[in-house]
Amino acid sequence: MKTQDIISLPRPKTKGTMSLEESISRRRSIRSFAPKELSLDEISQILWATQGITDKMQGFRAAPSAGALYPLEIYVVKSDGVFHYNVEEHSLEKIRSNDVREEIVRAAWGQSFIQQAPVSIVICAVRTRTISRYGSRGNRYVDIEVGHAAENLHLQAVALGLASVPIGAFTDSEVKRILTLPRDTEPIYIIPVGHTK
Image (cartoon, rainbow, N blue to C red; front, side, top):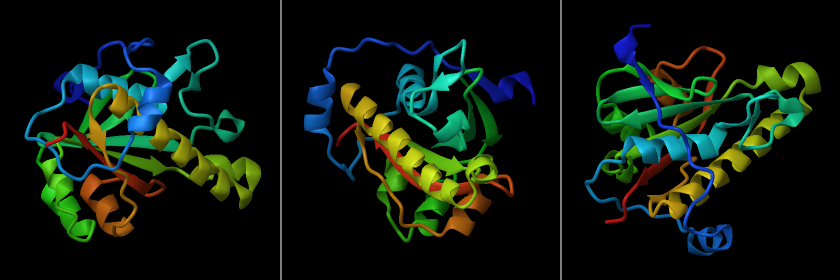
């Protein structure tokens, strides 16, 4: 991968100005976004809250994971392309260089606010990482973990003064094709994030 295809993210903050209780109280699903880009600091903070490393010695992440197997992979969709979040390096790796948001709207059954949002976070899973240890029960653990990561994302967005909405209604195979996901990687959640209109 070329150097220009890798974006190092700013160091995330571990102290904010809004309390957890206030974030919980204010969290709502918002489907209308202003035409304002997110800063790299905001994207960094959201990705860290979703799946970032919080214990470098043991490699633990922001969201709990059954057996610390971490089956989740995070992709970022913006007007300038599709990016994979490299958790270990806290960086973005460019996968595609074109704006695929309109394609994702079609794959998500016409939910046009996806194209309106400056960023959509797509939470994906490699289920075999968890199933290899826990058998079919691992499917449940993966789905639970997706919920943990998504709620972290939503609460962090609120704490940053941003809006978000969870989307589960889409054609999996189409989203997988658009993002050029590896064969073993399944898209589970699309979460548009941006400034409220």
